[in-house]
Length: 219
Image 1 (cartoon, rainbow, N blue to C red):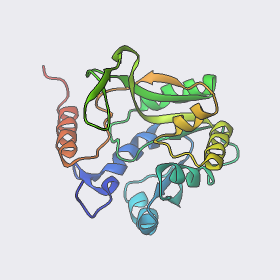
Image 2 (image 1 turned 120 degrees about the horizontal axis):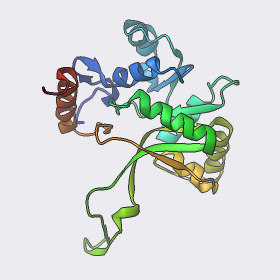
Image 3 (image 1 turned 90 degrees about the vertical axis):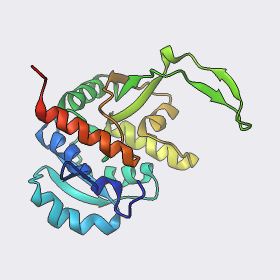
């Protein structure tokens, strides 16, 4: 993002990106508690300022993140209530998650053990070699772009993380760790709006999405 502020705390429509997501989980009837994993330097501010300021009553713990995404998730898993059966992992910089997505992945995780939100790829995908030359064109009909939320049986996810730690695996999402165990992961349709904010122009798109949602469908 080119900013000194961690991107999850950048403003979107006057509200931190993180809060947009948290409000959805706060409102979801299927979510019992929220464990917020943030950089260690932001823990106090989140606990004492952000959480109470936005009335996020389901936030039960604020936990320090790790060097990698999977390290942060592992830290969060250590704080999960022992009575929990299913955990939901969500990127803080996907502000347009919906309650329907949350419910869908939780329902699928209850029946299949693991599930994620994703969308079919629309672009033609090329595999390119280190020399910058195209090696082949992939069949996009079977290719999906993975999003979050991702939901898992909590014991399955713990096993997957422990296995990944032993193998020193470096992965980009929790589903990868579960796949390494040979356990199938189900996918449920997401939306193009459920984008990950990674570049400055994404915030401009996000502002347009917020404005469109506020204005509602045109008559």
